Image (cartoon, rainbow, N blue to C red):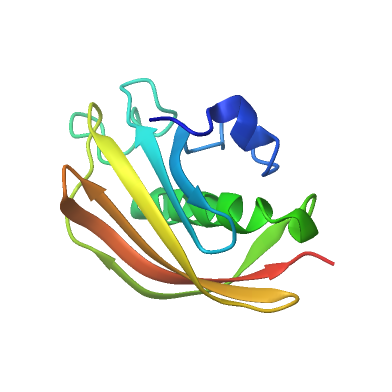
Length: 143
């Protein structure tokens, strides 16, 4: 079940095409947990160049997809409306499998710490239950 499509996601986070990298939110507990999905397509902007003849979703973009999922989670809290969360730290990132066009990447972010200006989320992304990437992301709200 889709809770938020891209138009509703845009009401929460400032990302826009071509850099809005999540397609839908399927579960949301504001400030605590968010699950989103990205449908990887042949026409994604990185496919022609990463890598010609063997397109692979860049790891850094999967981290960004997790970050956008976390931004929806914290941005859905009324007190954070309109705030922009920026990376402060990326920790414990591990890439476990290639993610290819035609696959669906499910992104899960759990907020494990949230204070006034800084928070930490634990992320996990998978394709059909097979882990693709895990990471802890620290963010700070733009002043």
